[in-house]
Length: 313
Image (cartoon, rainbow, N blue to C red; front, top):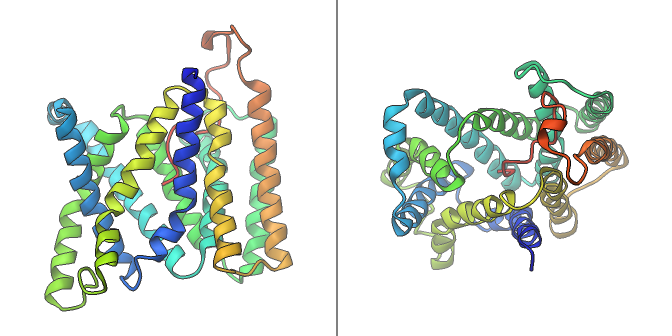
């Protein structure tokens, strides 16, 4: 099996796991979204610490100590990914799985806007068309919901900004996850301790299965991330850009087919516009990908391509 084909298998595995995340987090009820988030952070630190210890890979700690700017960037990334995780858990456990899927569908369009406004990158005409269609889709969905689809927008905005921050960092995924989770671990521990003292904690009081699932939320966070990292090193950017749609498609299917969330005609029209925008976006990326044998130097560097070098959550 070729290295690239193995990379596609890793990528599919990562995105399929993320696609079925709603089922996992639904099973963490009756714990509140904030308690679930706190345990996800804490057990992510524990699991990744064990992984790094097994790999004997702590050299990055010295690098962090020598670079306050890097540490500051990772702290900002931690706050953004914490907001993303929290919004996702809240959306799933408030029966809005379909809206969380919408958030990850529109994330590439948000990243394009950030590329233009923050990075001053060049955007092709078709990419502007895709962003415009996406904006119309959000307007249609706002009319349907009766308010802005704020969970979807928080997910897309927080992850888009997280992607922008992480683009300027250069820590591998496991090390990055460790630092980001560690930044959030202290407030998470304080919250869990307060919840336990107040007698309001669900952890350890529902069932043995629930306790195990809460603990393994750290593994559930890290495993697809590591699979994604293995894929990103082997698969072309355009390939990863296409694979990233697996997760929200599966999440949408879970919301509709397993949890029977409503999809009235107006909402379906809004989603159809989002899919049209993504089709335009993907076709443009495929059309502009380097031909076989063409080097990166022969392409235009200052353009926005599908930002798929980071996982969706």
